[in-house]
Image (cartoon, rainbow, N blue to C red):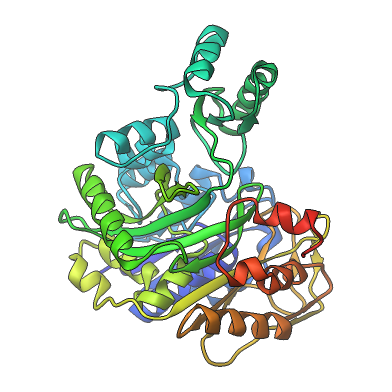
Length: 449
């Protein structure tokens, strides 16, 4: 087992990794920017190293600075968390060259899955269904027109090298096609350093379903069930739950078996999430894979009793799946709300000092956060303040528990998404499990009715 791990991240995920390390008896090193000097992950790590100014490009994304911090503190491994360098194949390679274990998949697998079109083609070759689309990157206006005629409208253009809604455009007719193509390429270039885009049939009212997986270094891959992530705005998730109301035990077993077989074929290791869209007729299509721990991993931990971060560490240390994961069993239902520092009406970010932070508690309630009364939410990073996670015996109890917990969560000094989360949980369509990726749009347009 590792003796010391550097956590190459900030906020709640850095604190989450530090907690897992403490329980495993592993020493920790925090890295931080000047803006995060008073953060809890810095306070609770055994050592801490400042790696630069507030801007992430000069600190958390600065590979030489992170590696230098790892070398001067003599760590065995680096856990990247999510975001920042977590899916950076070059960073994984640099760790390897520096003889530091990267707690994640192999660099070549990160590279493969990071190229969204390549990942789609690879998973299709391994037997997973994909949305009808272009055979690779769309090169030029002539191919653009031909592929659009073949696929049909509506369709969607997507950046080949990225995600999160950037470099993505929905096209409903021929007149919109060329301007959308040019805009998507421009956004993709700015966001990911390459203008490459590909094309897919656009599903009007899909659900977003994802499957949690773990793979060890001995060829074993398992799945830990699915999460429903349809409640999202601009492709950023707001509410997640497990299991999905749309997936029964038979479907879960069938889908899980196909995913496990595909990932064993490519030699996948450590934690990952395979993402799908489900059409209104129940058809399910692979869209991408995230080669890291997810923000919403706690809902899976609640329903499986598996500590995913500890499992990541044990797998990276070479332990076999049985020992790394332990006993797994699916029980109950879990829901997570992402509490963001933003105006719940306009979604404008709300940086500033938290004057009051009173988290809810009680049976089946978990709060993952690095916030506290007096903490400052800086304007440089993601707006996530806390993750509120609940578990119930069934979905109805989980919804009731989440409503109660949201009412008891007090954050003052900044605006948060809590009022929006309460509207979502109170909506009859949410209670009925009638979800799709346009839920928030409809909620706002109908004033919550």
